[in-house]
Image 1 (cartoon, rainbow, N blue to C red):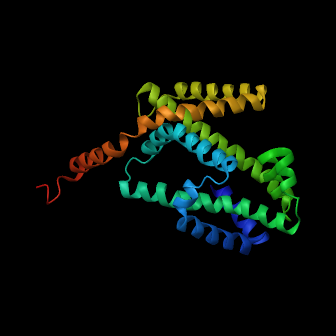
Image 2: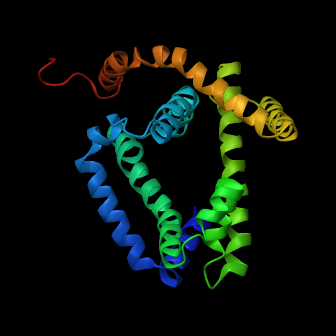
Length: 246
């Protein structure tokens, strides 16, 4: 997170900082004002099918693991603190981070048409990110720094997921190190196999995750009404009944 903050600051200072900040507030305001219209619009099936449906299923597929991990690391926090951090602060910070790179890419593309879009068409998203970073004056330092940041984020995600899987399998809040290492190695092995298989293997796994998200969504639905009841029960156990309940 410190490295991400440093890179963010460097980009704002040495890059199109004013354009990025203006784009963030403008687009975020439009998003909030037109949330339901944007969420349900089907005028572009190609884009919306990819983003809305695919990533909606993707997020649902990771919902149980993410919820378990957040619950585990949030012990000692209040529900209000968790909701503010997860439902308010995290989306704002995430959108701003997206605007840092995306806004810079849009700015450079407007200044020199084709310099970013050509890389997107030829090499996909990874090539696009490198193309954006290479436009900055400190590119020789920023490119390796971003690569290190990507590795750190992936390692952190793998560690978090292996911890959660080990916790679910063992039934313990703090699973043993060998169990965590086993699942981390298994995840790494599957990733290596998919990379070996190429784009087809990764696409197949992504499709599998989206398909399995359908039954997972039915598992998550009961939590919408059971979670408040559990929260009320925990509140009574920790702080006693309220004046109205007495």
